[in-house]
Length: 498
Image (tube, rainbow, N blue to C red; front, side, top):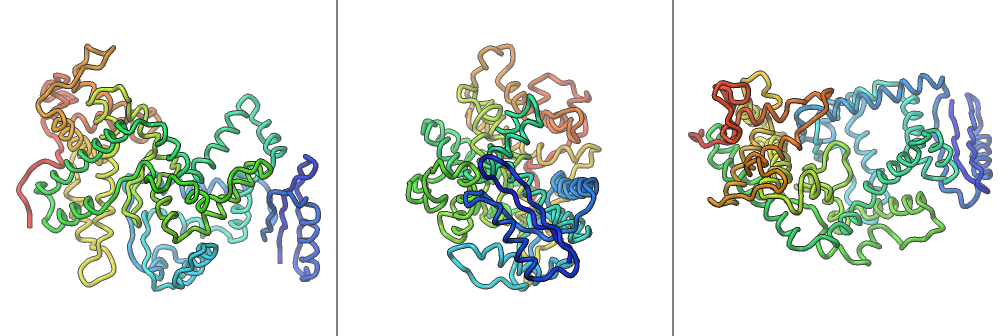
């Protein structure tokens, strides 16, 4: 046996690490002694300690390992489209050969063990929904690494993420390494954990200071974009009748959530979800740990389901689709610049938050189709999914940059014009030289702008150059770079297929 007992503790403002290394032949009594020594050197007020079994290797190897793990999972998050998977736990072995269906069942049972409401036993025969097959591929790649190395990586990653928050003195030591950026490091570290854990509280706080009329306007804007997408889908001739039925039903059954319902704004429900009120003796980590334990225990309760519908910090997007709950979760930060300006024009409202929402809806349609089982089976119809991808393909060289931006643009523009209902939108104060429609397109391109190093730096140009209203708004000659004679179209009226 090779192992490492790793403890972090704080006593009298002195930070210490304690490593106990043991090798083959270590008796159970010696193991208990090492654990007792670790606990004995940690004050009763210590914020955490944990034990892991790992091999002790050169630090450069561990750095390389961490880089490999992160690169695997990062690669799965930058794919153009997320292809979901619906099936049985036992079937995941086809994608991750290192884990059997029972392995997955055991892991999931442990994940739910801390909840107050114990559900039925999870078995390999239970259904599972995986939001991205690329994530399964990343897991398969990671599990090809030595198991003990992975265990060490997991423990060290936890220490990096949470360890500094467990002690003010340890945090100060690590922050000092960043020099002038130490305050930025402190804010970023704490803010990340706050946003992930206390998402419901943050959304409630945002809701409390917003004017109800502004929130209603936001909801109406999103509803109009959604209704326009449904209308376009019903008339879209490149989709079969069955596909159009699936997608329109999907839009009808899903829910969009920005702020918690009024029922969530009660001290009793928040206390059940997060635990006791603020106790300064606990410190940040103490509160974080207490809240996480309460959240774990709340799995299966109605208040936890409501909380799960709320946006949690996602570094790649201000919104996302939650397939199991059929919810589009939008962060409150999306209802702010540059997506939303309280004193902006109607074109800015639709070109900002409206377009962002349309992107979210269009991007989720493929997941909706793949989640529908084929007749007589428990698995999605690959044939139907292929038809959807074909319908949304564009033969142009840069078509990968067109979806979902072009169909989202088509839908948002139509909703914008419907809102105006023949009236003129106001010009933006300070930019009166631009027409209202030009401001609409400028707002969209502001959202789509990217660094030169990005893999999608031309996302705005590649979408708007295929959209005739853009060419008219900016007087682009037919045949020019921004108004080509051959253009892609998506959600335009056409002849229905059966």
